[in-house]
Length: 455
Image (cartoon, rainbow, N blue to C red; front, top):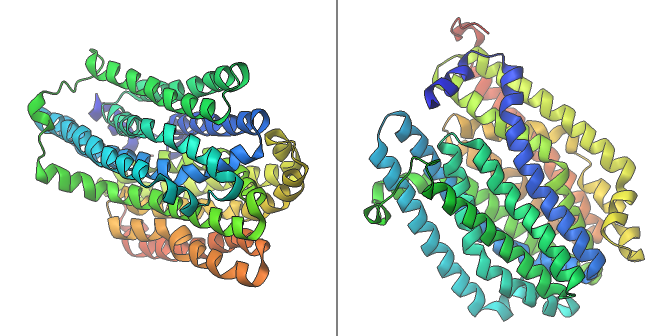
């Protein structure tokens, strides 16, 4: 079945393929983004704007631990899909067992450390002043559920590796819907405040975990592991780690960005500025879902045709993906530019937040029409197995440009220096990516070398 499905990547029209691949990815990202977005709206309206800032402080810690599960999932899923395709079932089972063991050990260690140093970590991540207490309440409860979230992120990628995208999509929908329902019950009905928001989030992770366990125990999954599969195989661990490192590095950069932003903004404008960034951060996760969906859909198409040495289809997949993603980026840009005030009003009724957020949001999204090139370019190198260029280009925006900019510009321009760092970093990273992508196309994907495959 996997071979039949993958064969179409080299035959079907690129535009049609890209839509087929991008839609499921977009739906998954949309559902997760909507969950975060609506959760923030509920918390902002039912608890208060300080609660939004408190949750934003906790995000880097929970985000990074969950990213471990995602990285292990992506790295192991690559091994599993190739093993299943070549009838190496035992290697697939051993890889899955190792993924579970590795995810459990790493996340439990991090949770223990996170709870031990709770009073130091929260202020370090921007949870100061009035934000500290609600952040501590949320942090403590959510951290208990983060290992389950990491296992869910890992398991979801394995489900996709088995060729079961519908089950993977359901696994993403369950915690999102569960969290929103529980938010209403625990915050609105039982008036539990931050504690209610925290338990709603943690319980939603448990619901997702329960579904994923059911999937692998049911007849829907081919991966029926035994206790022996949980014992570490160092060759599998090494391959899983190297393949997942790009994902982990990207998520780590996101966590570092949140840490810096929360602290810098608190020093510049107090809790209100942290709340402004929290709202903008939610919109970044939500509004860009179609662009990210196209990027995810592009990966298997480019990878398959590169492996087949069909350079013409690789070139066409790059051009088509950039075109589609850019068109979607322009639509996102227009929506933010025209409706920023309306968007902010959904999150909070705080007059200060409503006044300050729209202009900041417009700066943050100012370069949205061109970011498709940066995303597709870095994804291309990941698709063809060039880990170092993929890693460097993935980190270029936040690691090499944004973090230095946000450390320097606010010293000269104040809070506006924070917001203009976003479009400057986007432009610089896009220029760098464009250079290396164009160089790769000229040197490796010459039209004269293309094989004569039919479109």
